[in-house]
Length: 345
Image (cartoon, rainbow, N blue to C red):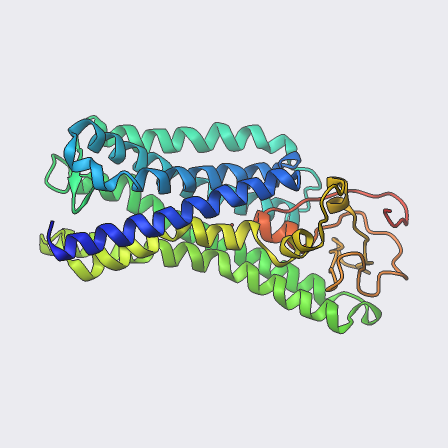
C-alpha cells in the first residue's frame, strides 16, 4: 500500500473509530437520562444510530479489498446509513420547527409519519444504484463506482443532490427557528432578563447556528470532490480525499457534541452521584414569558435554580436549553404543558 493510501486509510479509520465511540457514549447518555421517553429524544437516537452505523462500516475499509462481497456490503451499508442520516437530520429540524414556530405542543402524533416517510427515502436511494450493479471499489473504500454504468448519475441523483436539498431545508428551518426564538427573547419582561438569562439566550442561539454549519462542514468537501471528479475525470485527488476522510469520519463526534453532550447535560452528569434517582434529571422550574406565545426555561449555572424564576407565574410550554440543543441539527426539544402556576419539586 502506497504512502498516500495508507494516510487516507489511517485518517478514515481513526476518525471513524472516535466517532463510533462518541455515538455509543451519546446513546448511553440518552438512555441514562431517559430522553428516549420523548419524541425528540427518540429522533436523536435514530440519527445517532445511523451515524454510528456509518462509522462502524467505515472501520471495515482495511478489509474491503480482500473480499468482493464485503466491498459491496460496505458500499450498500454506507449509502443507506449516510442517506438516512441526512433524512433524519431534516426530520429533527422539522420536529423543532413544529414545536417552536408552528406551536404544536405535542408532536407524538407525527412520530409514525416521520418513520413512514424517512426510511423509504433512504431505502430507495440505496436500491437504485444496485439495479445497475454500481456498488464497488472507489478510492480506498467502497461505494458507488464512478466507472460503473450510470455510476456518476447515481452518485448525484441518489446522494449529492438530495444532500444539497437537505442542507437547504435545514438552513431554512433553523433560520425560522432562530428568528422565532430571538423574537420571543425580545418579549421577555425586563425583570426576567438577568445576566444569566441573557447568557443562556446567547448560548441557545449560537447552538442553533451550529447545526447547519456542522452538516455543511461534514459534506462540503465530499461534494466538491465529486463535482471535481465528474468534471475532470480524476476521481482520486489526494488532498480532497484526505479532507473528505477527516470530515466524514468526524460526523459522529460532531453530532454527539452538538445534539447530545450539551452544556446542561454535562452539568447534570457532573452533579449526578452514585445511587441518585434518574428522576432528578427531569426537575425544572419555569420562567414567565410575558406576551410571548412560548415560555422558555433559561437555566442558570446552577441546575437547581432558574434565573429570576421565583416570581414566575404560569408557563404553559417549557423548552429547556439542553432539550432544544438535543433536538435541533441536530434538535431535542421537550414540551410539557401546565395549566396553573407551579414549581416542580
